[in-house]
Length: 194
Length: 194
DNA sequence: CCCGAATGTGTACGATGCTTACATCACGCT
DNA sequence: AGCGTGATGTAAGCATCGTACACATTCGGG
Image (cartoon, rainbow over all chains, first blue to last red; front, side):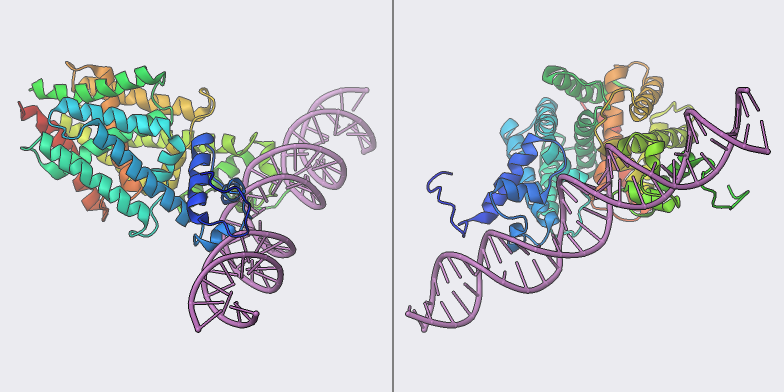
């Protein structure tokens, strides 16, 4: 990122630089992302981004897609072949941690209603859904895979969002992790019930 | 609300009128709520609201609290004494329907991080949490009530939000309802599993 | 070498949240 | 009755935002 520091008129690869600056801003303050701030951060005029993105939404869509990719990698790394329900709990913990580690990104990924169904964000989200479906059906081969995948994603997503919004008694990372695993365990404990 | 239509300088109960106007706008366009638009709608100058609300956030907090109350009533009406898991599924359907019926309100209730823990929004949210805890522990007396309540709320909340954000294949109301009940059923079907 | 296309700049407009200074009304006290 | 004081609404202004438009600069192929 520092091969040549000359402030040339043409930036070289402004598109990537803007995405990087935007991601940085997203990690720093949770507050709303501003296109002007992104441009400022990239050391470029306020309207320069419009050469590379149709509008703010397109930039955000790209960021969200990147976020989905990151989340996917994190989940894949957490449990490559989740066979047991305990592995699924590990996935849940990582999902929630991702949301709490990068709250602004997570909100961007979800909080915004997908406009067109074919934008980068929507595609990446669908991939995440497929990921869940695959692994859930591996762990529970005898269940209604589709419905159980929906339920699993919802459960984990709800845990993430309720924590993010402070609707659950929040605390340090360990407490959150404990609550998440307790919730998953409680659901699975229903298996012992009449 | 129409006893005297004289546009007097002093508006009889501007506070209530602003809340009503804001709620109307929220129901109409999903897009962001603007304080100026609220004032416009109430037929009053742009800065008049500041006489009654410290800032935009306070107005929104009030709206969110009202939303939590509405949601609570709706859930209570759907299943006054939920004894069976099937009753709980009915609660889930109503929760999701509320989110889809009033998307902007729902986003306001949750999507915004609670600033101070004692504002009206946070209190109302805590009441909803207590509601869930009470009814879950009634339906599953032998379970870890706290953890199972967290899981239940998360499951339902995730279903609502994923639908709201179009991350699940959406469709008409019946399809959504079917998917919600299928998800709940799939979770409960785990009870038959080893 | 030079011109067109790609890329970035500057200016401008309307909208927003919010502050500050001011105008207008309503009611109680004398 | 009249008046003043506090409650209430208005007007003007600031900083920020997204973005449309015209212009400037640079790069690359003939």
